[in-house]
Amino acid sequence: LSKLFLTSSSGDRKAPLAVVLSCIAYLGRSASPLSLLILVSSLAMGIGIGKSPSASIEDVKSSRHSESSTKELSLIKKWTIVSASRFMLSPVLMYGLLVLFSNLGFIEDMDRNPFLWFVLMLEATMPPAQNQTTMLQVVHKSKEAGEMAKFLFVVYATSMIPVVIIVSAAMQKFGLV
Image: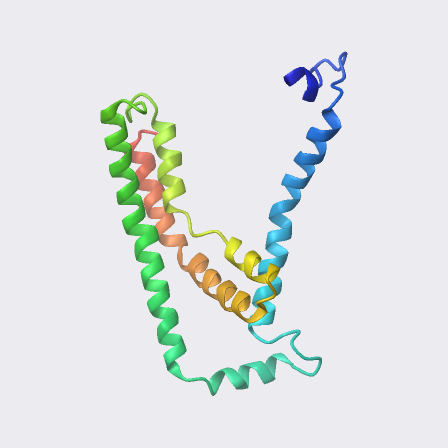
């Protein structure tokens, strides 16, 4: 299979399907920038930019002040639930699963493969992906996509401190520093 898709490192043998692999790699490299563009456009539409030609940032700000504080309270509640589950519950659950699977013999223990443990703990700690925003844009729900983008922005902005603490603790625990 590798002879069909991969050209030899010396370049003396050309793979007949190397162009297919190159196209797939190109699409993969473009996925992150495209998702970022969707997220930024959702943030802009969420604050009202682009909804009407006459809407300015000042108009949007003045309309924000007239909203009730119930929406802000729900944002705080959502943020608290997501942050607590993502930065406390998820790492503890992942560590427990790693210990369980190690004891059952499915994975190597922490001393034999600390990098595997570190990567899995890192995956359990990272903020949620912004694919929800992309999916909402695809089904033409711009308002919901804007709200989701704002919420994810708040989660990303506040995730710096817990991620640094958890990553530092995991690196020390797994002997990577």
